[in-house]
Length: 107
Length: 121
Image 1: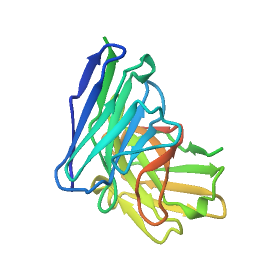
Image 2 (image 1 turned 90 degrees about the horizontal axis):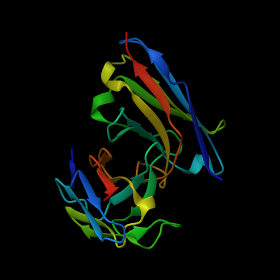
Image 3 (image 1 turned 45 degrees about the vertical axis):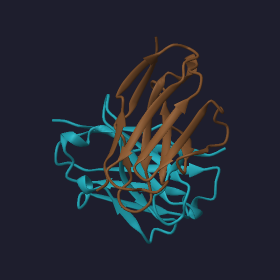
């Protein structure tokens, strides 16, 4: 099975900072990658699919890039409401696998 | 408005069984695959199982194969997860998730609020 590894596992940044989260697949997955945001005590929310397509209604400060094995989620200007844990997910053939999550906090 | 309402969680002894249900509304249920995703307390998301739009295809994570069975009733807009031989490691909130594709699991655009399953003696 393909494994998904996120880094870092947690980060602390200031409001307005640019934040980058990395997700690496153990094998190539073309662009079959989604990103989710889970705020404390809430249900996961789809942010990005196809590695770089923003889900409707998601603020434009979120962006995704990458293909093959290496992917990135970027928050261009961190806002207080972005405090959450972010997960990548590989989809398509085989088991659907999530990364272990990256917890984002405000410094 | 899309709504997914899970039910059936609770406390069960190791080796026991539970049947989870997820009632869907607000979209054409029979056109989309559905999945179950779980989250152990304080842990990350873990995909469990999926079923194609007409129930003809089912998919399972390796750790539940032979123990869990997913099914759906399109006349009732409901997806089920029958869980047998439960272990302590199955303790988690189980989320029902709507897929964006019809036949096989893809990514999930709507999630239910979850139902807690606790396996303990």
